[in-house]
Image (cartoon, rainbow, N blue to C red; front, side, top):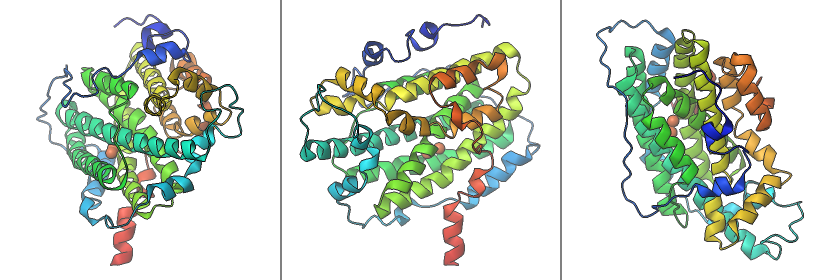
Length: 375
Ligand SMILES: [Fe+2]
Ligand SMILES: [Fe+2]
């Protein structure tokens, strides 16, 4: 790998981050496919060193073993009226567009009915993407079991595989029994997951999944958990978050050790990968498939979204875990603060001093709290 500086074009396929035509050129071309194969280029690594030398990973592993929960124990008999739920959740959906002059846009004439339909589709879309992302986590973490050379990390990753199976299970069940439709995987999310899986370097799996994708998921779940009034979804998200906090901690703890021995050029490659992942995730939240399904001009609506006054607050919030974790890993300031500059351009640098996620799992463990209060 050369340490030559790569351009935006090289890293994300376009010079301008907000180039709408380039964003929309990435589409899911095979929405009817049932299986999707990705070539993994990594080696499966045995280690004969069974010594338990990594105390922080050991602690995490012990915690994971006692914090398992059963998806069947969630209150699935809770009746869910999606119209009532999204009514109460307006904040998450079209509120981003409210208080903004929509004259001349495709939604100019929208009334309550159209916005309600948008809110419902937006919820179906959001939960569908969580579902697909969870399967990505399942596959990436199974890959880490194979590729990471440390026994303590293999042990821990094995518990995460079980966690992710449970997450896929609960989101699939919620979508099937409580909501009103599925969406195929968003093209930007798919592209990112494919790249993470295809990368031969085991630490890149961690950076792409545990730090970037799961860091964003933890923030997004937290936001929806706080906002939703639907008790089943609230508990489901709270339990998933108890697990996700450990997963992100797994990434931070493992990469802290590994990065300490990398060269500047190698760190720079990690910075570029973090930037690319951030852009893909920003693009995915533009929800292009929702506008398509609603039959309005996608390009125009993405343009409205990119210029909406409240959008930066909502989308920036999604990065509130990623940025402090990247800082803790030394990725913000290495190579003359290259990633700091990129995160500044994306409008998310303000989170750099928020709490990082290496210890948060001890306070987010709702499962342990519920067990203690039941005992
Ligand atoms: Fe998960
Ligand atoms: Fe996870």
